Image (cartoon, rainbow, N blue to C red; front, side, top):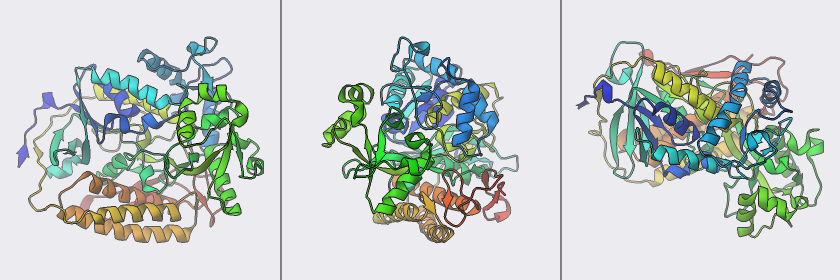
Length: 545
């Protein structure tokens, strides 16, 4: 069956309702209709989980050069300087836009723009605007209020994109183009064809591919996997950032202890009270995240520990309650008084530094398909993301993406094919999905974690190929649901991570290999390319030496 779509009514479809997606939506909606899809409730994305803050080059003791230098240092030689400079130059504008949007940042009458600025690991000065220790939640709430009240924006909760509709679906001999998406209405279990004048992937990262992660359940790499299947390049997927300090507690396996706590003076210690960061880096607790995460992993394995401790007791109860109320309350609820006892912490998968290759306007390789935020590779993060650059990237490039969408000439939207379910049936056993999900996350944690070896990576790739075959067979024969779609996307992303890691014959930033422990004098991004034409198998190439 064919669905005809009038060009004048085709909206801009944004997949994801976090900071990146909402930023694009609010700017585009001033001139064009917008549809925003959220595969769970609107409040469940990763933005609301961000505690630390957002970078702003605002203070008299700060400069664009300093921020660029810190970003490059953290990124271990793989940061694109043009990207870092562009985003740093627009950081003040991003903060001002958020303030005007109603974000209640923590105030300081003596601070720039009247804001209190904090410092995090890898930063030379205080330049992090924050809302206590729940910055993401404050930003997300403020923007959601604006989006909900905007007449030109349609919000669809519990809708999940399946795949991008391209020229290939229309069997047209032309330069490939994105014309829309197939999307699942989760509550009604029906797939709809959504024509779009442009599609924006703002789906976040892929943390749920690992057993232990600070990410919400939404982080299943959907945008990366869909763009890969549509023929886009994917870059730097070997660089998965493990946040050094996730709360170690059986009831709270995904609760992050913000880096800002270390920025204010909290100390990492062994259970016997011994500090250990001096043996790993002269910057101690304020070293970049990759160094701190590896140091904790090393000490845990060396001493046979389940966790290390983050001690903030010397900061005092009044200070902790004022500056870290979320952490204080959550830990107290679990029986941990952080003013009087250290916090047990472990590293956990936190941020995807690679993703869909885009330019500074959010454009992917496929005309009509854009991507913004954690789902992208722009060159900003290099081999390791500098703390609080992620929210900044969402706002700055969300705005440039919206501008390009509004400036580009819209193409005529052809009639698009409906989703075909004529050859499938209802799944007989959902346990297959649950089993494969658990196996995938465990093997990624064991074989593709903080410290890697070639043998481990090869074992992981072998099993991933078998899982992928099983999942593809299941996908071809049964009606889709959210769990199946997320598993399909996760296994695609797992393969991208492993293939990228195998191609990097050095240790750099977040990628540490025992077989290649040294850092090469010169290195380049890792880029994977998929070829669709004439039945060619996916292939990969690396720009690294």
